[in-house]
Image 1: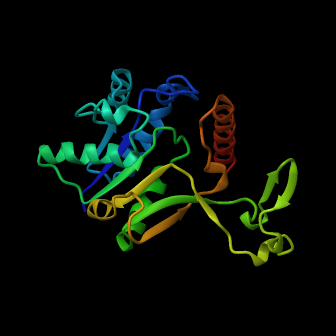
Image 2: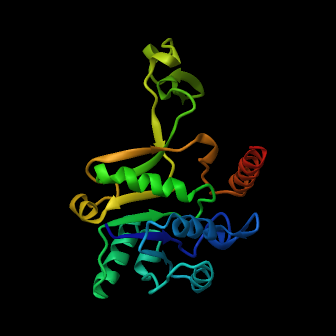
Length: 231
Protein backbone atom coordinates (compact mmCIF):
# COMPACT_ATOMS: atom_id res chain seq x y z
CA UNK A 1 0.00 0.00 0.00
CA UNK A 2 1.65 3.23 -1.18
CA UNK A 3 1.38 6.11 1.27
CA UNK A 4 2.20 9.79 1.63
CA UNK A 5 2.75 12.00 4.66
CA UNK A 6 1.40 15.51 4.10
CA UNK A 7 2.58 18.03 6.68
CA UNK A 8 0.39 21.12 6.51
CA UNK A 9 2.34 24.25 7.43
CA UNK A 10 0.79 27.60 6.63
CA UNK A 11 2.96 30.70 7.06
CA UNK A 12 0.45 32.81 8.95
CA UNK A 13 0.23 32.45 12.72
CA UNK A 14 -1.96 34.83 14.65
CA UNK A 15 -0.84 34.22 18.25
CA UNK A 16 2.70 32.79 18.00
CA UNK A 17 4.74 34.48 15.28
CA UNK A 18 6.29 32.04 12.76
CA UNK A 19 5.20 29.17 15.00
CA UNK A 20 5.87 26.40 12.51
CA UNK A 21 9.59 27.19 12.24
CA UNK A 22 10.15 28.75 15.67
CA UNK A 23 12.94 27.05 17.63
CA UNK A 24 11.57 24.42 19.98
CA UNK A 25 14.29 23.07 22.27
CA UNK A 26 16.99 23.03 19.65
CA UNK A 27 15.33 22.74 16.26
CA UNK A 28 12.46 24.24 14.27
CA UNK A 29 9.05 23.03 15.40
CA UNK A 30 8.20 21.53 12.01
CA UNK A 31 11.35 19.39 12.13
CA UNK A 32 9.74 17.13 14.75
CA UNK A 33 6.89 16.23 12.40
CA UNK A 34 9.28 15.67 9.49
CA UNK A 35 11.63 13.52 11.57
CA UNK A 36 8.80 11.36 12.92
CA UNK A 37 7.40 10.78 9.43
CA UNK A 38 10.77 9.97 7.86
CA UNK A 39 11.97 7.76 10.68
CA UNK A 40 8.77 5.71 10.60
CA UNK A 41 9.83 4.45 7.14
CA UNK A 42 6.23 3.77 6.17
CA UNK A 43 5.84 6.59 3.66
CA UNK A 44 6.85 6.63 0.01
CA UNK A 45 6.81 10.42 0.18
CA UNK A 46 7.10 12.91 3.04
CA UNK A 47 6.07 16.36 1.84
CA UNK A 48 5.18 19.76 3.26
CA UNK A 49 2.30 21.84 1.94
CA UNK A 50 3.01 25.52 2.44
CA UNK A 51 2.75 28.87 0.69
CA UNK A 52 5.69 30.23 2.70
CA UNK A 53 9.18 30.24 1.12
CA UNK A 54 11.02 30.21 4.43
CA UNK A 55 9.03 27.25 5.72
CA UNK A 56 9.69 25.52 2.41
CA UNK A 57 13.46 25.95 2.80
CA UNK A 58 13.44 24.73 6.41
CA UNK A 59 11.35 21.71 5.42
CA UNK A 60 13.81 20.77 2.68
CA UNK A 61 16.75 21.14 5.09
CA UNK A 62 15.17 18.46 7.28
CA UNK A 63 14.50 16.08 4.42
CA UNK A 64 10.93 16.78 3.35
CA UNK A 65 9.83 17.37 -0.22
CA UNK A 66 8.15 20.59 -1.31
CA UNK A 67 7.43 19.84 -4.97
CA UNK A 68 4.95 22.72 -5.33
CA UNK A 69 3.72 25.63 -3.27
CA UNK A 70 0.26 25.80 -1.77
CA UNK A 71 -2.22 27.95 -3.68
CA UNK A 72 -3.23 31.35 -2.34
CA UNK A 73 -6.80 30.12 -1.98
CA UNK A 74 -5.79 27.25 0.27
CA UNK A 75 -3.46 29.43 2.31
CA UNK A 76 -6.35 31.58 3.49
CA UNK A 77 -8.11 31.48 6.86
CA UNK A 78 -11.13 29.93 5.16
CA UNK A 79 -9.42 26.87 3.68
CA UNK A 80 -10.08 23.58 5.44
CA UNK A 81 -7.62 20.77 6.02
CA UNK A 82 -9.58 18.72 3.49
CA UNK A 83 -9.09 21.48 0.89
CA UNK A 84 -5.33 21.44 1.47
CA UNK A 85 -5.04 17.64 1.28
CA UNK A 86 -7.23 17.52 -1.83
CA UNK A 87 -4.96 20.06 -3.52
CA UNK A 88 -1.87 17.98 -2.72
CA UNK A 89 -3.38 14.72 -3.98
CA UNK A 90 -4.61 16.47 -7.14
CA UNK A 91 -1.18 17.97 -7.85
CA UNK A 92 0.50 14.58 -7.50
CA UNK A 93 -2.08 13.05 -9.83
CA UNK A 94 -0.95 15.55 -12.48
CA UNK A 95 2.50 13.98 -12.10
CA UNK A 96 0.96 10.48 -12.41
CA UNK A 97 1.69 9.74 -8.77
CA UNK A 98 -1.02 8.01 -6.76
CA UNK A 99 -1.21 6.96 -3.12
CA UNK A 100 -3.43 4.34 -1.52
CA UNK A 101 -3.18 5.96 1.90
CA UNK A 102 -2.33 9.38 3.27
CA UNK A 103 -1.41 10.80 6.62
CA UNK A 104 -2.12 14.45 7.28
CA UNK A 105 0.32 15.59 9.99
CA UNK A 106 0.07 18.98 11.63
CA UNK A 107 3.37 20.87 12.02
CA UNK A 108 3.31 21.57 15.78
CA UNK A 109 3.57 18.01 17.11
CA UNK A 110 6.85 17.70 19.04
CA UNK A 111 5.49 14.68 20.93
CA UNK A 112 4.75 12.67 17.78
CA UNK A 113 6.92 9.56 17.57
CA UNK A 114 7.76 7.42 14.56
CA UNK A 115 6.48 4.34 16.42
CA UNK A 116 3.12 6.04 16.89
CA UNK A 117 2.80 6.51 13.14
CA UNK A 118 3.86 2.91 12.47
CA UNK A 119 1.32 1.48 14.91
CA UNK A 120 -1.44 3.73 13.57
CA UNK A 121 -0.57 2.63 10.03
CA UNK A 122 -0.80 -1.03 11.05
CA UNK A 123 -4.17 -0.40 12.66
CA UNK A 124 -5.50 1.13 9.47
CA UNK A 125 -5.17 -2.17 7.64
CA UNK A 126 -8.49 -3.18 9.23
CA UNK A 127 -10.08 0.28 9.10
CA UNK A 128 -10.70 3.13 6.68
CA UNK A 129 -9.05 5.77 8.86
CA UNK A 130 -7.25 6.26 12.18
CA UNK A 131 -7.53 9.26 14.49
CA UNK A 132 -5.36 9.85 17.60
CA UNK A 133 -7.41 10.60 20.69
CA UNK A 134 -6.82 11.28 24.37
CA UNK A 135 -9.11 10.40 27.28
CA UNK A 136 -10.85 13.26 29.07
CA UNK A 137 -9.28 13.54 32.55
CA UNK A 138 -12.71 13.66 34.20
CA UNK A 139 -16.14 12.38 33.06
CA UNK A 140 -17.75 14.86 30.68
CA UNK A 141 -21.08 13.88 32.23
CA UNK A 142 -20.02 16.00 35.21
CA UNK A 143 -19.86 19.16 33.08
CA UNK A 144 -21.28 22.37 34.58
CA UNK A 145 -22.92 25.41 32.97
CA UNK A 146 -22.79 29.03 34.08
CA UNK A 147 -25.93 31.05 33.32
CA UNK A 148 -26.42 34.52 34.73
CA UNK A 149 -23.53 33.87 37.09
CA UNK A 150 -25.20 30.78 38.55
CA UNK A 151 -23.55 27.37 38.35
CA UNK A 152 -25.80 24.51 37.23
CA UNK A 153 -25.04 20.88 36.29
CA UNK A 154 -25.32 20.13 32.60
CA UNK A 155 -26.83 16.78 33.60
CA UNK A 156 -28.00 16.76 37.21
CA UNK A 157 -28.73 13.03 37.14
CA UNK A 158 -25.09 12.28 36.28
CA UNK A 159 -23.60 14.24 39.18
CA UNK A 160 -23.95 11.36 41.61
CA UNK A 161 -22.66 8.64 39.29
CA UNK A 162 -19.21 7.33 40.22
CA UNK A 163 -16.49 7.92 37.64
CA UNK A 164 -15.76 4.17 37.42
CA UNK A 165 -19.38 3.59 36.43
CA UNK A 166 -19.16 5.98 33.48
CA UNK A 167 -17.72 5.00 30.13
CA UNK A 168 -14.52 6.96 29.30
CA UNK A 169 -14.85 9.63 26.60
CA UNK A 170 -12.11 10.78 24.24
CA UNK A 171 -11.19 13.89 22.27
CA UNK A 172 -9.31 14.37 19.00
CA UNK A 173 -5.78 15.52 19.87
CA UNK A 174 -5.16 17.13 16.47
CA UNK A 175 -1.80 15.50 15.73
CA UNK A 176 -2.45 13.56 12.55
CA UNK A 177 -5.12 11.81 10.47
CA UNK A 178 -4.47 8.53 8.67
CA UNK A 179 -6.90 7.72 5.89
CA UNK A 180 -7.27 5.51 2.84
CA UNK A 181 -7.33 7.93 -0.07
CA UNK A 182 -10.39 6.50 -1.80
CA UNK A 183 -12.32 6.60 1.47
CA UNK A 184 -11.41 10.24 2.04
CA UNK A 185 -13.04 11.11 -1.27
CA UNK A 186 -15.98 8.79 -0.71
CA UNK A 187 -16.84 10.54 2.57
CA UNK A 188 -15.32 13.97 1.76
CA UNK A 189 -13.61 13.78 5.14
CA UNK A 190 -10.39 12.60 6.75
CA UNK A 191 -12.53 10.88 9.38
CA UNK A 192 -13.95 8.44 6.89
CA UNK A 193 -16.06 5.34 7.17
CA UNK A 194 -14.89 2.87 9.79
CA UNK A 195 -12.45 4.95 11.83
CA UNK A 196 -10.17 3.48 14.48
CA UNK A 197 -9.01 5.31 17.58
CA UNK A 198 -5.34 5.47 18.46
CA UNK A 199 -5.09 6.41 22.13
CA UNK A 200 -2.40 8.95 23.06
CA UNK A 201 -1.10 9.38 26.59
CA UNK A 202 -2.18 12.60 28.31
CA UNK A 203 1.44 13.76 28.70
CA UNK A 204 1.76 13.78 24.92
CA UNK A 205 -1.44 15.75 24.26
CA UNK A 206 -0.79 19.47 24.02
CA UNK A 207 -2.34 22.17 21.86
CA UNK A 208 0.18 24.88 21.07
CA UNK A 209 -1.80 28.02 20.31
CA UNK A 210 -0.42 30.52 22.83
CA UNK A 211 2.96 31.33 24.38
CA UNK A 212 1.73 29.70 27.58
CA UNK A 213 0.92 26.53 25.60
CA UNK A 214 4.39 26.66 24.07
CA UNK A 215 6.11 26.90 27.45
CA UNK A 216 3.99 24.08 28.84
CA UNK A 217 4.88 21.92 25.82
CA UNK A 218 8.57 22.57 26.44
CA UNK A 219 8.16 21.59 30.09
CA UNK A 220 6.31 18.38 29.18
CA UNK A 221 8.89 17.51 26.54
CA UNK A 222 11.75 17.93 29.01
CA UNK A 223 9.93 15.81 31.58
CA UNK A 224 9.41 13.02 29.04
CA UNK A 225 13.07 13.19 28.00
CA UNK A 226 14.19 13.00 31.63
CA UNK A 227 11.89 10.02 32.17
CA UNK A 228 13.49 8.22 29.22
CA UNK A 229 16.98 8.91 30.56
CA UNK A 230 16.06 7.56 33.99
CA UNK A 231 14.95 4.30 32.40
